[in-house]
Image 1: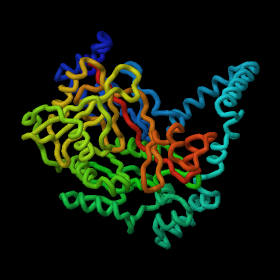
Image 2 (image 1 turned 90 degrees about the horizontal axis):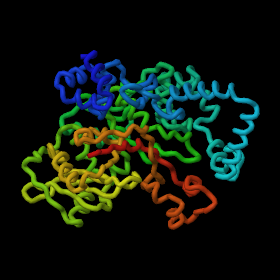
Image 3 (image 1 turned 180 degrees about the horizontal axis):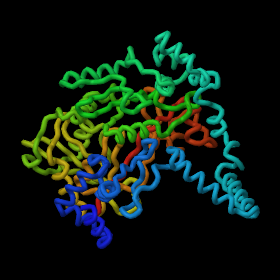
Image 4 (image 1 turned 180 degrees about the vertical axis):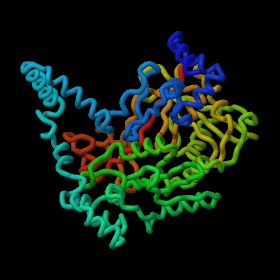
Length: 482
């Protein structure tokens, strides 16, 4: 099979995946030998490559590498700021290139860099910018507290001998308790189960247990030096409770880490675990929707077959009401909606509109959801067939929220995952509410922020007003091409 697939790739470089897909024996061999996650990997090319060369596509730092093509294989696992693999390679290449520069070329490069900085920011060097000065003036951990964390004897006395909790030590050092846990792991201390948990963690744990599942609290085994708040072993399901305040960044807090949540999600995926993030705001304000979402993940929702349903066009009023009641993000402006009905009742919905970010003539699948606590088997496929007919052979794009979904459904619908590396997005918060970054663009922020200063950036305005920046897991783009 190995040699046969290679021959197919060499002789049919443009259609090899279709040939393999149509051959049951070849597909069975690929699925049996690939080392990538069949549920989260949507491109057949990557599965074939992994099966042929026995590679997982995960770097030594547990970051997901970018798959380029069947001939080139995997590239790096992201930007140099997020993974040391890329950083080391980039640094080496830059160093090698610089040794070949003449003094004249070095001066020209420096002059162009300085001119660009002055044109964009009015300063010759980054370190002269007010917003950068503000960031550089705040450290994640003070030198004194950093020494304590690295001091085996001090941390051993406090954590093991005095039996102080990670939370208690974290409060003393003015850092997140998880950071204390990471240093305990580095010192090879066995991590104790937390004796105190947030009310939300307890409520979610009890909810899952009420449906017959065992739930582990504070798991330090799966991700090594990182804690998982709740873990359901039977389903390999992990749940992170992300408090808006503690998981966001302010100038007076810990160092900003854009990859905090996405890196943890990627590491869990590499270990075969489905990690979902739930904010305290979502639990407090959308509890029934979150419960429904969890039940779907646990396989405990009511099931309905699409073949027993019929297609219909809901009114705009019904569309908005259904989305607000059943979709975590609520309603959004659309061009048209397609509904699935059972015995006269709307049970599933897809909405389509002009692509918000893609500059082509593509349409965008904006929303898809089912009735709370209900799974429609074959529902997405039946709705999308109608959507394709209405879009008249136009390409369709959609975006998957990686904090809660893997994008598996897009593979079933015939979408291809974008090769572009996913980068985290963000929103602003004061610890209690969520404010979209779009509402904080300079053209919008001036309308509602009392302390708005037009000479300052969005970030500086928001930080100065006491808001915090929360980085999410980003959104994976998918494209359907007719």
